[in-house]
Image (cartoon, rainbow, N blue to C red; front, side, top):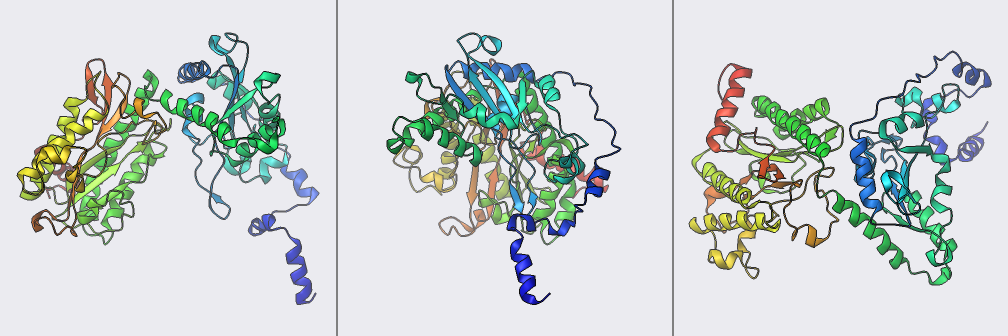
Length: 527
């Protein structure tokens, strides 16, 4: 065979098949017959119903009441390629996880459909019947069992069956092969007997395309179909699902406590690792790795990329490169959170003296931020507005900046809408909702978020900071290169705010004592 023949053979192999060239998988009938034989049957015992099942059913019932007569489509999302034929660990879309109760890495491509039924005849007396569509586990006598590297049990381990998911979740299940019909049947204008669809968009491109095609094919005048009107319908569903998470139920609150406890343990591991970090040319990576190990041991993952920022890097708000050296006289700003197996995440920040002791100027800045955090905590009471937390915290910071001679105007002018000069050193918001997403409920209406009333069941952060960059020549040199943030996770109760992350020391003296105790325990000496 000459070179031209070789080129022809290569060109005849489709590109999508070439990714498997490295596997050298046999394709003979003898191999297939052998691989399909002599496997133990899968276990048939059904699991008990999950504790989350009743809570997830109540959430579906709530959303059902807002969209009577409409089909609701909530995809989990597909696997996402990390590089070539390697995928990222799968994480379902938060709305899907919230309405099903599924966490971990279950079921890429799954879709939850709430099908409209006559009012009051649906699940739990609601107006819809919910069905979870997903790819069932292939039998061990099938080719998929050993040949499909994305879903075959031979490659990725056993997955729950349709019956197992139904038992766990108290939720009807169906084969994903039935999904296309379930989404597209009877679609059309309600005035002619059709069913309107609402979709959580930009989660699964294939589902977006399927819904768009169904809408186009059933439109009275496809050429003049106003897609913006349909997009607005979908956006209202996304908005409603986001707002549904503003108040956490009892199960969710326990998950948040679990995530915070694991995060506290992760911060302890970081302090244990600091002596080695101080000797490493990328000490920030040592810190990042110490926390990540705890996140994987106790939870599912990180809730977000860890910020392990030392020295001037701590003044970069979203510093996630974590490539810097940690020097003994610097502060380490660690912003990190463990995501529990349920996918609920903590979000905690502490600013630590790398050598275990604050310098005078570091302590001065640190205590100003702590005072601001305490003011935000005091303002966070049932019935007050969410935005009041930010106002209280930043007013304290503006007062400190004025006392230090850094603020070019009065405190009153700085905190006014027309001023805001203090935001040069505190540019971010002081609080955000927390839950399945680190910035949870982000699609909620402004009047329910920033202008919303603090209500028992809300979980949110309080996280003021001050950031003085080396490059800021408008401030005295002693402040430059200091970045401080203190962040806690807060549960609002009828009795007021509860600090879920209070187990991590906050006062400067307590931080020093805590670090010294860990150093003594691990190294037999204080730093």
